[in-house]
Length: 343
Image (cartoon, rainbow, N blue to C red; front, top):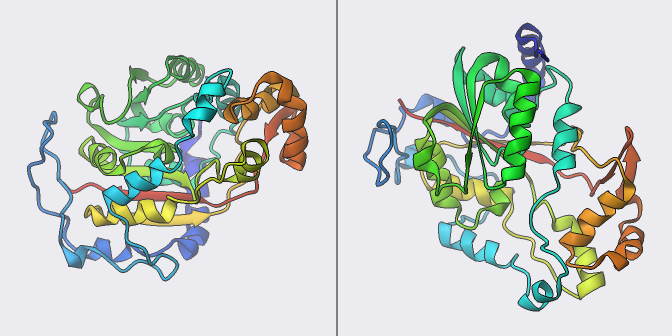
């Protein structure tokens, strides 16, 4: 059984936080000096009463940073996400579905993670997690967001629409000795089938959410202490814009982005804080070069005969490192959004 030594985690967290706090954006800093929003009854029945976010309390909001001057409401998020839909003509001609994710990169990322090597999002979750607490991981994948927390928690509940990924999560939980159960389905559709947890985590899911407002409010209702989200600053496939132009003469959108997500969540009255920083954490990969190329080819709705062209177009973005083949798009910052839930 793999152990993540909490004493070392605490020491490394203390050292890292001294540096990271200098970098952390201060949009939610003032929230700590204000009372938490009063309890309100929401429209969704939960297993217990939880604080609902205030909808119009100006003192609980701080101005957006100068780099973000575009307030985003739920409809604008929906409209922006709709622009990412692929034309029906491309989908109809695709030899196989471009959706879904291969398991191997998820598995290799988790298995190669160093014990105690926590991301900023991991640490924000860990500091709010009581001993023997519970974690709810939405879009669990193979457990990268939640398994590093297992020495401190009694149960991790993983939610995912993919049966294959849930099976991989259960396998990884057994490997590290974590207590785990799974719920198959999409969020927030399955929220009534999931328990309230001390901490709710959700990594790299936001850009798959067509309607972010109800998604986020359902996360809020299922957390006792804190909600932690991790996402890339821009859409994770934005780096493929040149490939879509080359193979389909298709322009791709640039929004929404992490600043839009932050703006929308703050507009809901959630006391969100934000931190953005570069990350060199491994993303996993494939043992075979052809599988790495095929993963991008399928995403581009092309048939296997185009693999050589895809590999050529990828250029130096197709890399071999640490005995794994992977596509490494240009690095972009990882954004962590988190907020505490009122008592």
